[in-house]
Image 1 (cartoon, rainbow, N blue to C red):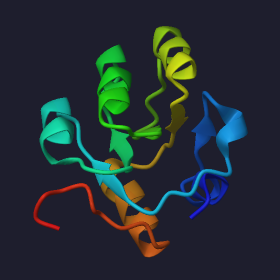
Image 2: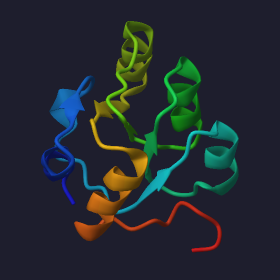
Image 3: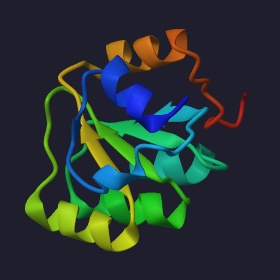
Length: 118
């Protein structure tokens, strides 16, 4: 699914890298513990999280995650936006809860390949 379609699907606000809307995303993981992301995330996945701190962007960079979606109306800080722009990581935010955002995305065709049991 094109990132531009994901933005519409979850009614997301784009905070960084607005010119990257042609990225193809087919899988995602949802986590608030970055240790879980590091332990279980593999491949190119989109991260959904409610955690707001620069470590999220640094973890995404380490795990080759190109898109982070902040849920529950949380917004990235200016420091996080600067870091994400530097690392070419798209930051989005949605008012949806983690559960609802994951459900809407799954229904739209995004799969959960980020966990080791899948």
